[in-house]
Image (cartoon, rainbow, N blue to C red; front, side):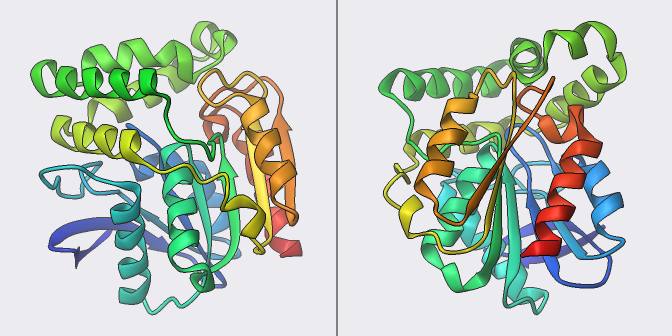
Length: 263
């Protein structure tokens, strides 16, 4: 674990392995431990950087709204701090929103993209209202209620009933999230722009991964991105939900390694 002063807050990150760099950006409401299995495998061949986004994990919370653009700037500044000019950027869920925002800002910094269980379109008005309600709930009640409500949407029914170790791992991650960090990110996701017009402009090699049972960002969202990005490959992981990298870690890792070897 290391840390750096980025955008006037303390950002904590993992930096391990030697080789071409890949930056792993976690989703909401998780932290860099989401990528535990990926870090172990990918770091044997690549330099792997896995940050805790502002307000998550061991990084400081920052008052206000954590927009996708601001969190993308955080990643770029971290790359600059580490002397990394270009990297593969891999984001899951909210991390995918950040990855797209980063590509739009500085495509020259992106060697390749991995977009996992995410989407390009903005929130609907209903979704924005739900995020505002969740932000207030996080601040007033903490993360336990949010974690328990989200778990059935994040994981497949089979995982919930038969893999208690994964249920505990995901729930513990959510409980560790700072309520003010969760609220800031929820506000930021509600404000994010529609990136569908960006997709045809993406020229970096792109791997799109989605769980076949993802209830939050369904397969159709990934298919839409795949059709819009000429340089993309779509992989649907069977028997996986929204955290496909956790439920089907070996398959996820194999697909990313195969993609990196070709890009």
